[in-house]
Image (cartoon, rainbow, N blue to C red; front, side, top):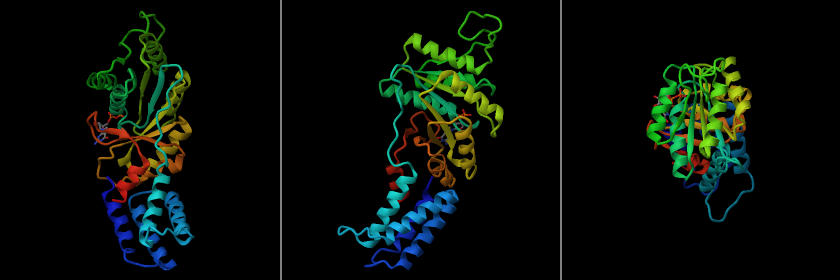
Length: 308
Ligand code: GDP
């Protein structure tokens, strides 16, 4: 995903090698190259500005290390600043003191929420948890069935409304199986009864941001009081990533971000801006269509990968 950014950054830093001493103009020239590399990769402008200002300030400052030559010193600074914009520490899932832990997924249609539900469930199972999925995307035809297939693959049960019957009940008229808030609540109740320690709620997406989408997501949130609300972001949507993330931060107030489609060849830098722009940590990375293509997001490992 970040091949061209990686190439550009390594190129910019390579020019410094062999220099015994760096002048301010060496540092400025390198900072310009880094700036261009980040902008070309779609990293958002305010994030680039802060990043470059920090690198310059530190490079021109008094950070002298006997163990590193000046070029290595700059590489170290760039690496540390990259780790910082990516969130610093790895952020783990917040587990509820009293199970079940409720994890709600939100994001645009096609972002990879349903796929992620399966990945997360499989990953949590591997950690000794007993997750259950809840199908609350009642908007898109086939979404419930897709989650059921994903659940089967991941080997975890899926709670879904039966068409034409009431949620969690005996078909009591007046309780709509088409109401995602009721399905979510009934799902959490079912998890308690069946002693699943984690509930993952898949919600509806839209092709674009709209008020109804946000209201539905925040209603589900209010009704289930999740321990984590994960905003699922397609890394390939380019500059739209930033505005989408901002809209969800305001509308649903998520606790963490999952970057999907990091295996794609798009520039992807906008996704790298999301932590800095929203203040919410990137928690997981999705790197393919298979259930195994998934991992915890480690800012330091991602920074090292980007720096080659
Ligand atoms: P949802 O509408 O948010 O639930 O999105 P889906 O889970 O249905 O995913 C939309 C499409 O993206 C599907 O074709 C998935 O197979 C694909 N997809 C999901 N995650 C990834 C990923 O990390 N990499 C790639 N290449 N494709 C993905």
